[in-house]
Length: 44
Image 1: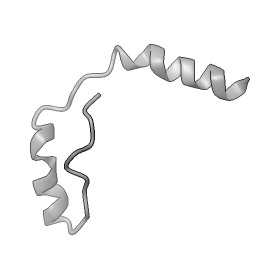
Image 2: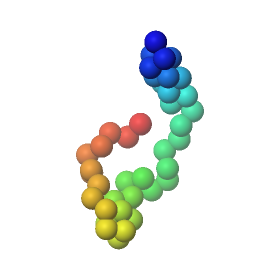
Image 3: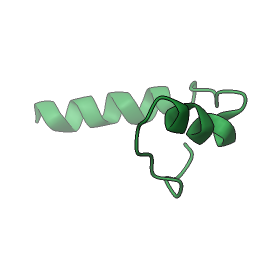
């Protein structure tokens, strides 16, 4: 039941999240830092 409540809380607050400007270019930063990133992850 706790997980269900937490999931509902995340879904309810998701509407208030904003996309980071330049999120499509974040892979450049990650590559510069030497990290492996997933280019096909869905944007929220």
